Image (cartoon, rainbow, N blue to C red; front, top):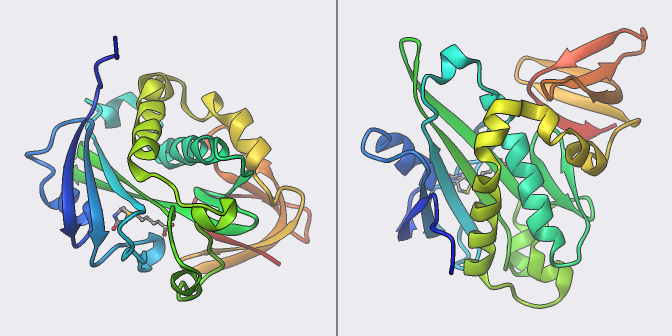
Length: 249
Ligand code: BTN
């Protein structure tokens, strides 16, 4: 007998953005409710970028999370995108490709981005109303569509030479995410540390991190216990970076 799902899914053929919908309707959506879309007309990426979302057979979904009393319990919410990036890698690896993570949560195959994660939170006073974790995975794209993306990108069909069935992949992704979600809330980054580090492809390399107001360069040494990036600058000083966009120098 199949185990009962702990999450439920609301599907849209077309929507502006599953994240925008989830944030607007947060009050009426339940904990662990998932919004999926066939197409997004205004897909959003990190750092105010666009997420190109016009192919029907790709993953565009947002997971609504409402962990209770989260702010008081000091839950590792900032690390949820890193947890999700490991899950995405493991799902993609089932198709016999090797996936890597570009801190904090980009998933790459052959050095090109295949999936991205955008987390948004709604906070009222000192109460977290909810968190929306948006995931986009390029499953089936043409070379022309890939070439229009403003950064090196790929899609699973191009990597394995055949099209990919979207529904089973979405189910696998969500089942795996929720399998250890509660445990992750209790344990934090240490639960995924090994899986995350083995897939981090720039450790030991010279990198540049662009964090909104400043740019830092140095050698990527590793991660703190909270999943922040440790960068060693020219002055040999360690710098802890909690957000930003990494490029190899
Ligand atoms: C990134 O820039 O790497 C994050 C991309 C996140 C894209 C997904 S697609 C589903 C969800 N809805 C959005 O508008 N964005 C996220």
